[in-house]
Image (cartoon, rainbow, N blue to C red; front, side, top):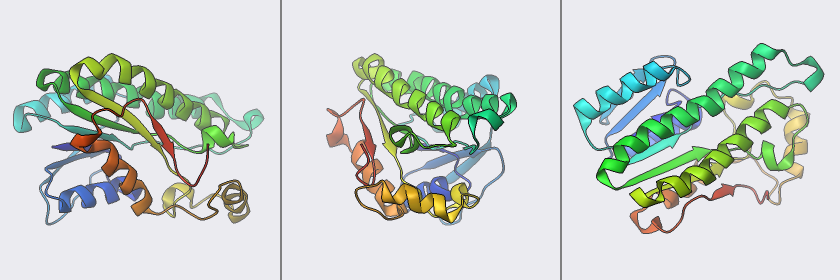
Length: 229
């Protein structure tokens, strides 16, 4: 069984459809409802930064579904603004979702995975961190925290046969970048070794690799797409 956060649209929606088509039992969560046809799917409406709500979701998952093999921690929000113009509330909202939410999901999933001595966790970083993108200081910092969490949790969870890795997508044509000026997207692409927008297939390729049973010796790694390092 796979749990996918931020499952309602964009990359999360693509992940749900991909793994549903592969025959996985898929559970998704987001703040708003979502429905998928033709696959084994259940959706939870959850704010992932709310500890009690996250714990309640995992309690229901344990009771109804049992073992959880894979967590794909895709949920996240972005904020584009100069530091001097960034309000504190925007900082708190972003860090709560991208860092606190990520931590809570990993912690609760690992509790289940530790009992069964098996698990695969894939977090979502961003090329905003290594590229140090102007106007995205807090977003880049939040994703740097995700990378650090990934590395430390990989060591802490290794004894339970749980791997923890991360994928760092380039810009992809989703709602996530719809308000970003085309000129800024062009400048980002020019800083990549492969100067094009990412595609869902690029992300699926990396996630498929991380969650394979044969990838048991790969943990604590972040793969940035597009030749970014």
